[in-house]
Length: 305
Ligand SMILES: Nc1nc2c(ncn2[C@@H]2O[C@H](COP(=O)(O)OP(=O)(O)O)[C@@H](O)[C@H]2O)c(=O)[nH]1
Ligand SMILES: [Mg+2]
Ligand SMILES: [Zn+2]
Image (cartoon, rainbow, N blue to C red; front, side, top):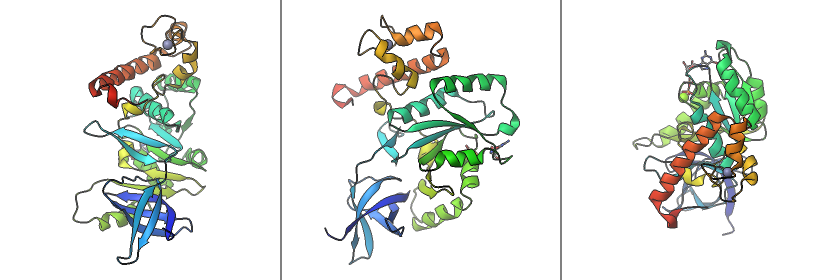
């Protein structure tokens, strides 16, 4: 095992991988063995197979964080690994679905990933209603960054937030995620195109890539992140990733309070007194009901945490 080396997975296209070793050298690689699933951002142990002049990924180094989604069959799977910032993009139009925003933020918080809102298309104007909603997120503890790809505004602030981070953009279709990626990384398409050619003849449609940003830090562009549904079984069981609930829950009478109808619930009390926003609480309740339905459907032995 003395010719193994550590590397980071910087692109995946099906089982075709690109890994970067400590020296910065990039190598084509593939997982060794069917059971090994690696995603963009993973740190791995590799070996060069001299007979075939191939790089094999032998082992996954434990992930610090990961963003998990529920795939089309409802099974939990990692999308990207070792992410530190989830950038949730919204815009004056399309009309924001704030429940979707809440779920992205909940998935991030539950996975130990920071969440930041990016409000794109600001040159269209932020109306009073959206501004009021953004104030709710600010009160909860989330920062929002105004920007406009069209007007070239806020891009500096966005690069600053990404410095020293591994970030990814998520949000509803049409908010400008692809536009932001192309603005931040002008040669993004070219680089992904090279990997696509590798996989010619196969029907694999997702490519994930980790890009280096001009001011340090990395941006992972992954279709799986853009359209993902959070994996319910990875949500924090007490707060489901709602940061206000996490703060308030120690004040609940019961340690296992679900903050639904329990007596002495600090979260319900805060909602009545106006300390927790009613829309955010309603969003929490919807996610809790979904969480309970899925947990019941799976049976006790498969429930996590
Ligand atoms: N007005 C305005 N339109 C934008 C801005 N950024 C992107 N768009 C437009 O919004 C639409 C959706 O952008 P796209 O990047 O494909 O969004 P995605 O679905 O989130 O990847 C396109 O027509 C873009 O030209 C912006 O800052 N201002
Ligand atoms: Mg897009
Ligand atoms: Zn409670």
